[in-house]
Amino acid sequence: MTAPLRSTLRIAIAGAGMAGMATALSLAQKGFELVDIYETASNLGFVGAGIQVAPNLSRVLQSLGVWHNIKDDAVEVKETSIRGTSVSTLSEMA
Image 1 (cartoon, one colour):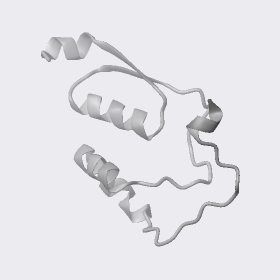
Image 2 (spheres, helix red, strand yellow):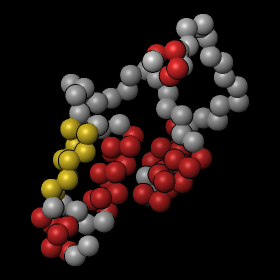
Image 3 (spheres, rainbow, N blue to C red):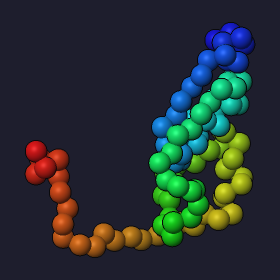
């Protein structure tokens, strides 16, 4: 893609979650200047929940140059459990 297009193409990203923010960062690193992120939440911040970062996501974060900013806060999960009995499958919802 030519440099002029990178400075004139408007890109809209729906959602400021991990995927939206990673997409915006990646586009910015590639030289795209007009990237807008739209989010319905009134503010961004911690909600008291953890984020599971699978190995392939950690590789993406490394390639974007941001893994070093968060790796010290990461913990390795050794065990987990899912509680509750109400689990719907797609076939039950249809």
